[in-house]
Image (cartoon, rainbow, N blue to C red; front, top):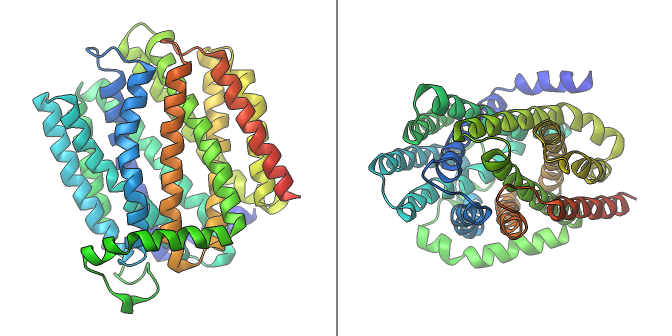
Amino acid sequence: MPVVRDLRVLLRLGNFRRLLAVRLLSQAADGVFQVALATYVVFSPEKQTSPGAIASAMAVLLLPYSLVGPFAGVLLDRWQRRQVFLYGNLLRALLAGCTAVLLVASVPDWLFYIAALSVTAVNRFVLAGLSAALPHVVDDERLVVANSLSPTAGTLAATVGGGLAFVVRLTVADSDAAVVLLGAALYLCGALTSLLMSRELLGPGEPSRGRPRLRTALSSSARGLADGVRHLAERRSAAGALAAMTVMRFCYGALTVMVLMLCRYAWTEREADGLALLGLTVAISGAGFFAAAVLTPWAVGRLGTYGWMALCAGAAAILEPALGLAFAPTPILAAAFILGLITQGAKIATDTVVQTAVDDDFRGRVFSLYDVLFNVAFVGAAGVAALMLPQDGRSVPLVATVAVLYLGVAAALTYRAR
C-alpha cells in the first residue's frame, strides 16, 4: 500500500522520528494530566458535579491561555523551536509537581486551578511549535502522510496516557496527586528527548533575527498577530478549513460534556464505575483516531481535502443522532469511535491545508490562532451544553443541534470542494 510505503520512508528519517518522540511523550503527559483534572473535577466523591461546573472548569483552564496563543505564535516565529520543546517541558514538569503538592495539601479549588492553568498554558507553545516544525523534517510530497502519523500519533499518545492515568487511579493509587506526578515524569522525558535534535533544525528560518528580549517580543505581539490574521485572510483555503474545523470542534466539545454527565450520573451509581466507563469511552475514541491516521491519506488522495472533510461532517450529521439519541452505553461507545475518526480525519486535512498554504514565517502565528479557535469553540460548547443538559446528561435538543451544525459544515465544504 502507498500509505504503508510512505510511513516506512518517514520513519527512516531520523529527525522526524526524534520530533515524533517529543510529541508522543509530551502529549502522553497531557493525557495523564487531563485525566487527573477530570477525575478531580467530575468524579471526586465529595463534589456534586453539574454541567455548569464542568463548563466553569473548562473556562478557567482553557480561556485564559487562549489569550496566550497569539503571543505564543509571535514568539514561536522568533525563538528556536527546539528550545521551546526543551524548556517548555521542563517547566511543565516542575509546575505539575507543584500541582500534585497542592492536591495533597487539599488547598481551595481556585488555587488548584491557578496551578493547573500554569501547566496547560505552556501547551500553547509546545503544540503550536510541533505543528510549525513538522515541515522542517519532511518534504512537501509526504506532508499529508506526516500529518496523518504525527498529530494522530500524538492524540493516540494522549489517549494512552489518559488510559494509564485511569489504571493508576483505579488500581495502583486512589490519588489524583499520584497521577499528576506520573504526568510530570513524562514531561521531563519529553524535555530530555528534545536534546537529540540540534538547536537550529526546526526553525524559524531566519536565525539572524535571533531571540528577542521578552519586552521587545511582547510589544510587537499585536502587530505580529495582525500580520498573521492578514496573511491567513489572503490564504482562503486555509481560512475555510479552519472555520469548518472550529465548528466541528464545537460539536465535539458539546458531546464531550454530555458523555461526562452520562458517565457520572446516568449509567452508573458508583463514581469508580463511571470513571472506568469514561476510560473505556476515551480508549474507543482513540481507536477512531488511529483509524483516521490510516484512512485519511487514501481518502484525501481520492476525494481531495475539502471532499474528505465534507464526507466526515456529513457522516457525523447522520450517525451522531442515530446513535446518540438512545443515550445508552453501547450506541454512545460506537459513536465515540466514529466521532474520533471523523474529528481526527478532518483535523489531519486542516493541518495539511494550513501547513501548505501558510508561509513558514507565519506558521507559528497561524497555528497559535488555530489553537485559540479550538479552545474558544470547546469552551463555548461547554457553556451551551451547560444550558441545555439536565443533570443526567440526556438532552434531545443538544443532540439535534449538533447534528444540524455538522450538516451545515458538510454543505459548506461540499460547495467549497466544487
